[in-house]
Length: 157
Image (cartoon, rainbow, N blue to C red):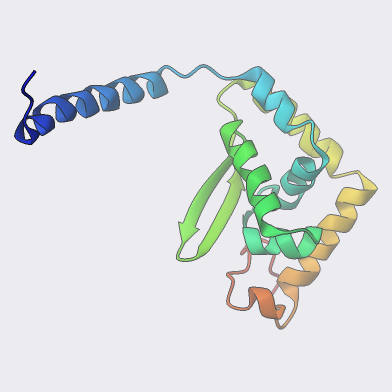
């Protein structure tokens, strides 16, 4: 079988093009994954992150400072919450800002609302929130997050 190098792009390009169409079609017909949603809510660290975000848009660096844990662990948990359809993200230069979004499923949205109300009354969650406010409202940010944009909704005038 005689196959020259100049023929390779002819066989590769159509394959890549077809694959891109298949991926795009599967994303449109994605069904809400209830199991993933409940697994996302079944972790203490992820609940603490949701409590810190609430109705704000918060940079990852503030989570690291508030929860006293490393950035890769925080990012892993935030990615899990994104896959579950609970969080949205926005990049601003080197900073990643996370915010809560309403799940696509109405029942899941109701459950998330109830979970958030429950978290707001939990003592540990209240302490986390106070720590976050302390960092956000401090006149000078800690050295490792100097220059990070403060969450607008948390900063008091």
